[in-house]
Length: 238
Picture 1 (cartoon, one colour):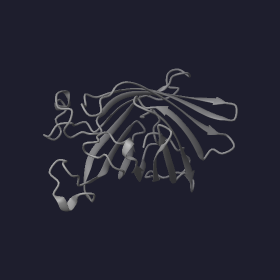
Picture 2 (tube, helix red, strand yellow):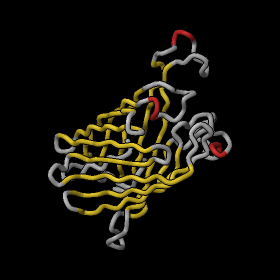
Picture 3 (spheres, rainbow, N blue to C red):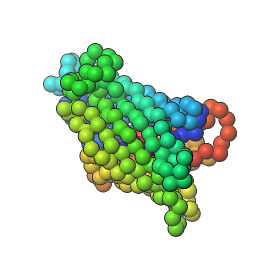
Picture 4 (cartoon, helix red, strand yellow):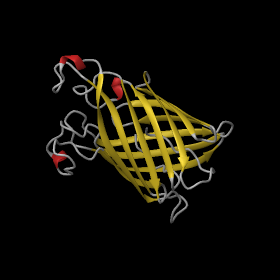
């Protein structure tokens, strides 16, 4: 699920994931385990943009795949994502949560970047489409830091409709701050997972159990293009 945590200004992230088929939005297009890779860059501490590619196999009775492509990774779905932080945590008021507005894959028709076509054509391109508003607040509690995340997601997909709330928590123990434990309801399923930071937070390992049993995992590399190394890992929704 998306949240309202942001990277430090100038942070660039590159990474990739193994995705269980249950973690993908369209059985007609996927229905098998696959992989993705992405790059994410934060500008001005309030704006993030990402470019994500998800590998696609040729599939019998699917789209226009010739026989020799069946079961082989021969293509990829490509989409952009963007986030804007409207309010930073603690801004204006010490109890203020961070508030972020975001979108993934803002097209779902066959005619390119048509921002209105998703209203009536919810089964074409734009498989990962979602619009959302997210709020995050952190609390210091005994033994660690607790993050609380509330998000409202929306799209008009016919294969993966979203129109409802999502909730999540994460916990970073004081004794092992490189570990980040996560639980969430992503508006569809209940999931648990974790991230683990290595090498001054430049590398992060990620694992998720969708519905508590379907494994997806990934690895990312982070670097701050503006220099400096005193910045925290804020990964939660890759």
